Image: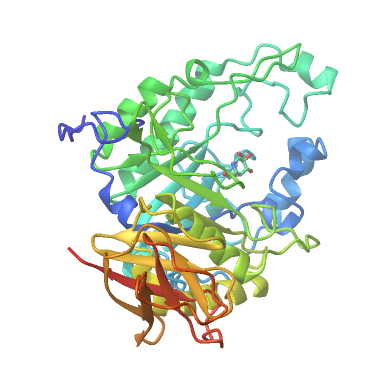
Length: 438
Ligand code: FHN
């Protein structure tokens, strides 16, 4: 068990957990969903959506041959996008292992690709300097001892349920914990464990959802921390601790509990599905994705943005396009993201603040005409510049002697008015860097 006890600074953080500062600093990560659902190309839940029998699903195993897979290319793309860590699916609900597990034949090294792709990914991303995160599904729709419940693909197959009525969940847990042990033993330092997911609140009538008791989560967590004392954990073991992981929505303010900040990370897709989905056209624009990143960090959260590589092992061109555009913005503006958090100052309309020490970053989501009023900052700003080109930006404060001649609304005594150029800078989201007086 980790003996580093950090002062109780976070509401959802166990004393047994390691110092989360790297995650809080890094802010921006890549989520990767890659498995047999990738060549199926129609959402990673298609096995259960279409109630596919494992024997039928076997064809995806037999044809899994991502011949264009290049972990180094993935890692370079993530690095250039400004991402500091990644989380990849080692096993999703389908039960397929992306590594050379000794506990099952249902693994990548037995498919036509014949390689331990997880090892290649971890090596490549580590080489690029990204922290290593592993996603691992507690749920397993392939394993013969995983008890059938209301989410299982064979939930409505009465014959199948009858034939499998004597499934022993303890045998599945020995397998599941054993695979986690492999992952945390054989692949070097793992920085972040992203379990997925618990659903004890679900009641399907004939069956119940699964939570901490079903997973033996306390025992699993203890093993994880023993094997990797510096690892961080998410909150999906149903233990009411770990990084809070809101999914596909943005909290409205910094997340707190019992008066303490909560460590949280929003996970988001680019088009609504996690696994590759050929026909899904709901792609968010780069501007939208950047605004989500900025909004998240303005509330002291992390942003884990997902890519679902296709069956050839490549990022979709639409993912690459967005990651490259995000990377260009991050090239100029990352210091308004990395190591920043929410500000006590109230941001103007259509703007977000992030702050690091005495540098306050004003992210302007809609470029206004000529002026922005910064509430509560009178007397506090030393200097201001546009971050993209470090060009000075003028600002004014209330002057009782000044006769307001322009049509501009009066300046509030507590505010500062920023005078903006009429033309928006040629960047997706302009940022003004405000140097506050110490
Ligand atoms: O069921 C999964 C889903 O497929 C995806 O992996 C997301 C990612 O956070 N987690 C679960 C849904 O909450």
